[in-house]
Image (tube, rainbow, N blue to C red; front, side):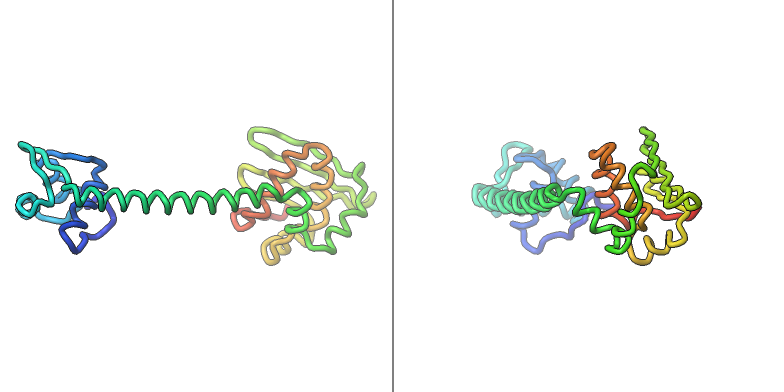
Length: 222
């Protein structure tokens, strides 16, 4: 099987430029170029590869010194142009990725908080006093366990496993709300309100993971 997933170009110029670029060399032994063309690229049978190389030398597409060949001056110019275009594409792609990352980093806890919670659930979460939310954090792996006390007779357990990307919760609205609507309930909203006060960095890390990768998470009911 070929090591490179692209078809043989139509012209001799393109074949040679692509072969040298994929080999990552400026000059190469004829026997190595034959091997590269026939076995690594699977563009020629071995006998056809050597015929192609000899023809390229006779057409002055390749310059030959003893048993080593390199691209002609005109093909090197074409190769340099190709390299510049590839570098420009990489630069544009990197700038786009950096812009996206910058936009993500500019978003704060409140932005993510609003994204993963329905407005009515946020309103309900503010009826829960922070003193009635007990949180324990375990590191390596990161697991956040909380008891959210709504009333003397209504206490809900929440467990967030950041490494396994799983939330286990006993709320009646969970996990249907998370799976079908992509939103968290008031108990999880209350947990994040308290966690932000305790460990802002961890709160942002978890809520960011939930916001941008909700499809990767597993939501289970106790």
